[in-house]
Length: 545
Ligand code: G1P
Ligand code: ZN
Image (cartoon, rainbow, N blue to C red; front, top):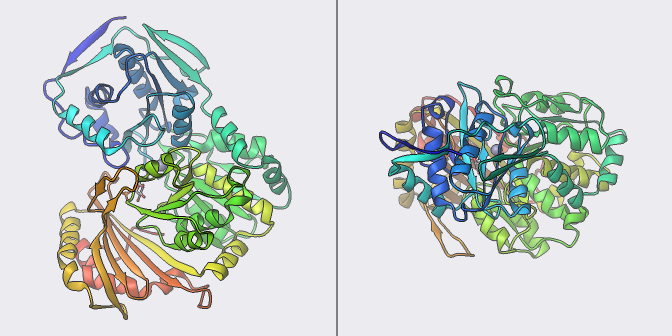
């Protein structure tokens, strides 16, 4: 082994990880020493590197395999004992979380920019997960960032050949063992422990055609093995199932805009009974029934209400959690079940503390993320299987499940309007103006209601007492409706403004309106108050969910 210290002319100044790790354009990552610097800072920061095991893999986007090679050569130079990676370097975020936990790894490095487009002109990303399998806490990402700002160089084994990712087996890189495993196997076994594959298989072999869209991203191999292999769904059930470096030119984000082909099969056609899609790295999910889109906030509420139908949750739930912008549909279910419901800031790491402490079993976000204590990330295919499990037991349609749910708990009309890639100054100007106005808004009329509270969401972690501030501007109205504004922490072009709209109708009210109609007065009122259209210069949102 020939470890070399490569000197940097100066440290990179722009390597601050966001809520989902370091996410930048592929061309930025192609800058000499850029990836290496961030990995060096990471390996200097995370505890247990000497003699430890690291899990490494990614969503297959452009740069994936090459980055795995760099990380292995740097791991060898830093004295790690073992790197566990996968054939083709393909590893979904949830499967990585599981591998970290089940192999006692010190950490995981996941190569993904999640749902952002990939390819030479797309984005790349590096996400660091801790020993619990979840996104590294802010204390670690802050320390990594501090390290990047004073880095003078990095250590790498210059002689080591790139690991052969085409076959399973062990390779020696100096003192380091690179273990290449099948990235799908362990994950599939975990799903078999949580769900009844005989019941789901019987449903899929009956008259219940389903369609799954892997969006040419990481879940293709997982979904093919699960749905078509083990559960007996016909060949062709998994669409776009081969991972491609540029996701076929698509935007692997499972929502009504970017997964419109799948959505249209279910919403406009009448062949399929159930449809689902996952994002680039496999942690997000979209669920659609025939003529019935399930919004993610409702999905979490349905899983909470029906959890006992899955073998893995037959004993009930310790509690549930949702991110602040997610609708309160789950809160109502939790109240009826008599279990606690926590409201956290956006981002999965806040759920991690609650899961580790055993306070919650299920959690989710409005942004198509749902998960449980089986790992420490959201999990797209897990949510799909959970829905299929419920449908297999209840033997009804998705639309019937939703109608019954609203009849019992009432309905939270909900929508998110995203204004993407707006000039950063315009976005911050709009946001800061509303924030300054907030104190004067309390008691004012808004969309025919009165503003009862106007604040910037802050969260005190009930497990470790840490305080997180500045998490989104809320206008809470006197009838329980609300509007929330946030600036995205994951975009790479300009700024993205997210406007979250929510209004509750009890079971006795009109439960079958179009959400945009039900929310129309809130939409108009927030546009007027925050001057969204004039300040962004956009006549309508880029994405409406
Ligand atoms: C978005 C979602 C958020 C999710 C994050 C990572 O973040 O809104 O719920 O946790 O992606 O998948 P945002 O761009 O809003 O900061
Ligand atoms: Zn993702």
